[in-house]
Image (tube, rainbow, N blue to C red; front, side, top):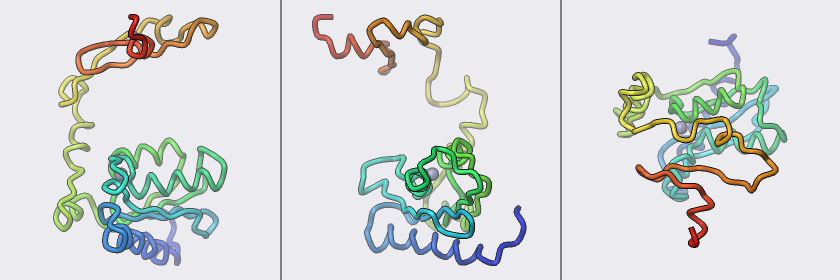
Length: 178
Ligand SMILES: [Zn+2]
């Protein structure tokens, strides 16, 4: 944990207020809110909008980080602290790493969110802790050769995707002539 900060509670109360707004006032999603702080000031705020946006990634932390990046015009957030009403899920925690956020403080734990809100992140944490071959989502290598991964930029752009058990290029998906 970091050194004591007298504003911790103030920022956390704001994150909790954002969670209340999202869930009770605007009904945008689950009861989760967040704020991002730099140099003692709130840079951005966010709430969960998963339900209203039909977007499983629209967590309060994601919204807060995206808005902070836009505000600060940077995809890295050094010197920033995230306050979130509940312990971040693996997606949001990974995003904190990507953004270089230095500190994360949360109120409710993963266990609290399950007990009081029926939100259960535990299976995801458990999945990620398993060896790759034991995880429930099927995964495997497709088109791993260098030329397929890093095609000659002078050639026609072509990217690859996996749809179920089928592999197709975006070009073939879009081109009915085959
Ligand atoms: Zn999350």
